[in-house]
Length: 143
Image (tube, rainbow, N blue to C red; front, side):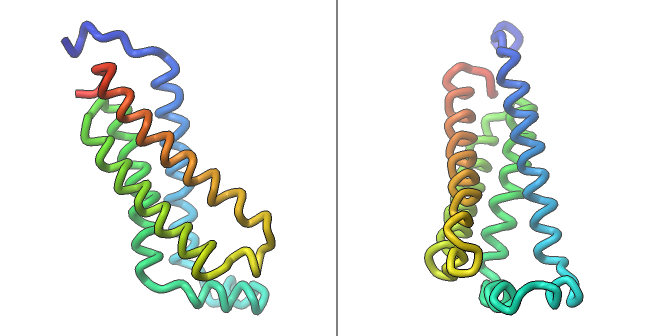
C-alpha cells in the first residue's frame, strides 16, 4: 500500500519549507543560549532584565519547540507516523514558551504590542504542523 499512495507535490514543498522554518528556530535557540556577555551588554537595560528573568524551564520548552519541530518535519519528509507525536511535543513547547514570554514575563512591556505577532505566527504554524501530520496519517501518506 505504501507505494500505491500518491502523495501530492504540495506536501513535499510544505514539509520542506516547514523544516527550514524550524531550522531557523534551532538557529535562534543557539543564538539565545549562546549569547555572549558583550552581546547581552549591548541590549537595553529593559531587554537585559527580560532576558535574565527567563527561568531554565522556558529554555527547555524552547528546545522542545524548535528541535521537536525540526525532527517532526524530518519525520514528515520520511513519511513516518511518529512525526505527529513529535510535532505535538513541539506544539506543547511552543505554547509553554509563548505563554511565559507574553503572559508571565510580559515581553510586550519591553518590545511593544508588535511583539505579539511572531508568537502568534509560531503558534499557528505549530498547530498547522500537527494538523498536517494528522491529515497525512488519514490519507495514508505516513506509515
